[in-house]
Each structure stands twice: as structure tokens, then as C-alpha cells.
Image (cartoon, rainbow, N blue to C red):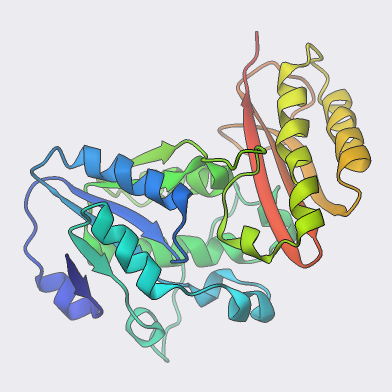
Length: 278
């Protein structure tokens, strides 16, 4: 397994076959392992699997959140070795952003709701760094997780709008035994918070299983479950949106997404579930 830290060296790296990229910010966990396994299968034994590890400062609207983001380089490298990753790209901030940088990629439509409404500038930072990674690594395929569903939708739009010849694949969310979506942030939960976190997935599943078609009623149902079973939780949002446009809808009459962000203390967790119209 090769480790590359500079843009110039990455540019010189010989490319053959299908080049599959799994972009990460490190602190790798079993959810990332799923992404890596998905990527490895896509190489079909002939291409190369690249994992990028870079904590991108421009997508954090809270400096303290950025400083607190976990860094576990040795464990990250070990997982990549176990999964037979061909190359890790782990640039520094100076490699990714120059002091004179003045151009960024702005998302104007899909980021108006959900995480985009409460984390101003977050997706502009995501779009900018992903565009950089695509240009530097030049993959044929990139794998993203469905846990960050809005991000996945935005990256698909970015590839279409900026004419990248890259296939974007979404991998299913990996969960703990109680249904909590695996996240690098779960390590910050205390024992009681972790017990209550089962309510996140439970609320979304109950919304999906309900025969109710009015979104306002489904949201009320989800909020009631959170209130009764996760009193330590503080909702950032619970919304139902069109899966393509990420715009709120009133009725389940098209492929929809129920999405939630919730705080336990200072730890912000997100989750979602796809809801299909009958």
C-alpha cells in the first residue's frame, strides 16, 4: 500500500484500469470499511482503490468542531491495509489550499434545506474539496455513504454540472446493534446518551412504516418518539424532502427522504431513511 502526501506526486502516479476513490476525513470506522469494500469490488481486480484522508477545514462552520474532529492515523492506515487499499492520499492543508486562493465551488439549490440550512457554507466547502480531489486523483468512480444523503445528492449534481466523467455510487448505512448509524462522532456520546440514540433510527423507521401520507403527520410522529425516548436529544431538524431536489414536500407522492439531525450535548448526529410512494 502506497501513501502519497503531495499533489505533485499524486499527479505523477501511474493510472491503469478503473480508479475508485473513497473520500474520507479519517477516523475510519465500520461504515468506512463498508465503503472501502464496495470500492474494492468495483476495481474488479484490475484497477486501483484509493482512499483519501483529509479533514477539510472549509466545510466546518464551527472552529471548535474542526479542532475536536478525531484523528486516528495509525488505525486508519491499518484498516486500509486490511482491506487491501492500493493507495492513501493524505495531503496537508498547504497542499490543498494556497494562501492566495480565491476561487471556490458554490452550491445554490440542493443545500437550501436540511444540513445546508443550519450549517452555512458547509456544502460549499464540501463541493470545493471534492472538486479538488477529483481533479487531483482523476478517479473513474467514487463511493460515498448514504448516511450523508444530502451530500451524496449534491456530489451527483456537481459531477453532472461540472462535466466530470465520474460514476458516483452510494453505499448503504452501517449501524450499531441498537440501530444508531455508525459515525466518527459516536465516540463523544456518554453512556446515557448512547442508550437514548436508538430512538433516532426508531423514529425514522416508524415514519417509513406508517401508512400516513401527510408529511406533517409523519414529522409529528417522529418528534413524539424522540421526545419520549430520547429526552437528552435536541432536534436540529426533522424534515421530509424530495430525494432528488432536497426540497420539502407536503405529501408522500414521490420518492422521499425523511432526514434528521439531533444534538446530544455538543455531539451532532444525522440519519435518514428512504420513503417510497405507493
